[in-house]
Amino acid sequence: MNRFQRVIFRHVPVFLAVLGVGLIWANAPVSAFEPYSEEALRRHVTHLAGPPLEGRGDSSRKLVASELADHFAAAGLGPLFVDEQGKPSYFQVIPDKADETGHRPEFGRNVGAILPGSDPDLAGQYVIVGVHYDHLGMRNGETYYGADDNATGVAMLLELSRRLAERKDNTSKRTIVFVAFDLEERMLWGSRWFASHPPIELSQVQLFVTADMIGRSLGNLAKSVVFLLGVEHSNELEDVVGQLEIPLDLEVGRLGIDLVGTRSDYGPFRDRQVPFAFFSTGEHPDYHTPFDTPDKVEYAKLANICSCVEQLVTMAADSNVRFTWNRLPEYGLNEPQILKRLVQILLEADESHEKELTSVQRYLVTSVEARCNKVLANGELNEGDRAWLARMAQVLLLTVF
Ligand SMILES: [Zn+2]
Image 1 (cartoon, rainbow, N blue to C red):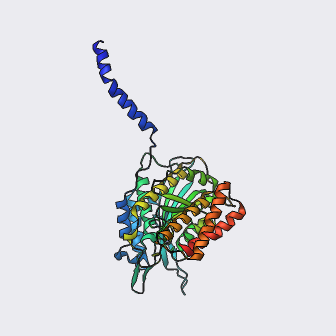
Image 2: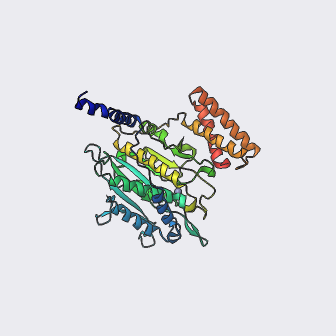
């Protein structure tokens, strides 16, 4: 063995070790998505749902709007709207009804920013992320803080927009639009105004994503579950959702939007046949009470949901496929799967006395379980099963959880 061979030989174990680590590395699932900071999300929610902002009602909505615009500007995102003088603006003023003189005073304001797409052929198409920032304000001397509803959604928007704006060399092909809607609690007035006075061509919107209440759990019971609704209206969206890397502690439960009707800002976009996705962890006993406070938000769960939203937004913005609208929604087995899961959660809570079901509720729950099992065993959901399950799911959501 000459000196050269000795050197090589001595280094063989090192070489093999490096090769081995390299192979393991190459085979490990590599996540492109940095986790969201729970601390940053907690800071946003604590501020937005803190006493000084008085529940983001009439006394503070304008202040909140200006803070959101400052955030977009600091992130380096340009304004989405133009004002009456034709100058770029982060604000879209929403007028109230005319007074006796015909003047229309300001009722509220949407806040929006834009991240231009990098592909000349696709930059004229859009992905909108829109969440409402208003809440109920003060009532009878009590503050309705609205931590889950919807400081959690705004916290997601703030972190997501900052992160995407920071990706200097990796801008998405399509243009991404960030909007904080006002007046959702007044019959979606803010998103309805936006959709009827859009700053961009709505026919060019690839996807509208919204999140309303994404920091708690349905009935305080479905701890690992976030619901995703509306996907049944677009097959291309369905394909992208199938590629999401779901964080380990999270379950994404897919439901048809018809189960909940018009509950948030997707309404005006759905009505215009814009493909949409609605994230929500569902109602809980503190919903629309003064007890919806920042200390009750589950920040690790919120961070996981933010990661899903970011994946969906960037995949939709980069997809080579244009999303289309299914006039007739297409339901798969996702819905019976999550319904079966919810039934299990209820039966476990009943057994552990965390929540006592009445005999009627127990009968309902076990009937739903049996029908889900039948559908899942058949491997297909026919129209009759879907209609029955949809009715029962509404009863479960409204009267059992
Ligand atoms: Zn809300």
